[in-house]
Image (cartoon, rainbow, N blue to C red; front, side, top):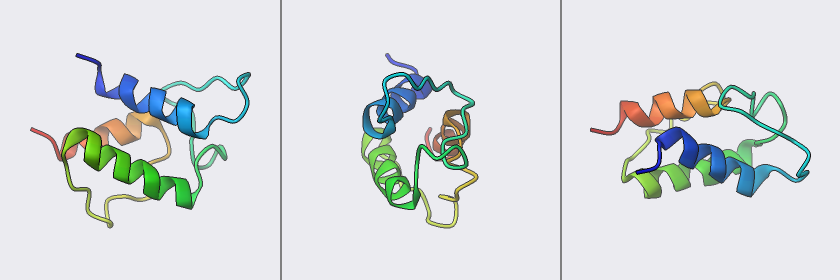
Length: 81
């Protein structure tokens, strides 16, 4: 089974990277780095909810929580299991 962090990283790469030369890691700042904007954050939240069968409360879906793949993984794990 794919690691949660690999699934999320691949989604971010596929959906939000416009330049193939950009390389992001689990720690790359996604929002403050300009890869993910507020509209994209909504679609990312929907992806996470559908993919991992969870409900993320809006007050937890903050820019800080979505600013890196590692932060997103921590958020997802908070609502799984």
